[in-house]
Every structure is written in structure tokens, then in C-alpha cells.
Amino acid sequence: MFMLCYVMSVMFFTALLFILLYLSYFMFTVTHHLTKTNSLYV
Image (cartoon, helix red, strand yellow):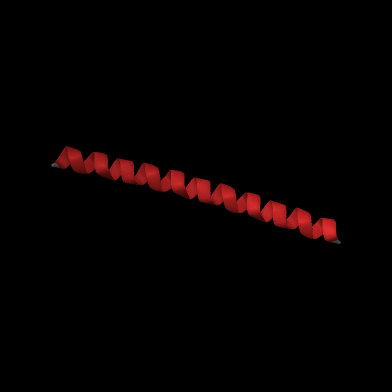
């Protein structure tokens, strides 16, 4: 039972880490794209 909880917590934290990395990468690309388009228009 303890091992099951440990595995579940590890999987949960790994998924959370991947989601945070993906969100940061997505936000970085969006902001980069927006700044690039803004500089082009200005």
C-alpha cells in the first residue's frame, strides 16, 4: 500500500513538472512571437 502511494505521488509530481515546463515554454514562445510582431508593426 505504501509503495502504491509512493508511485502515485512520484507520477503526479512528474506530470506536474512536465506541465509546468510545457506552460513556461508555451508562454515564452507566445511572448517572443508577440514582441516580434509588435516590433514589426512599430
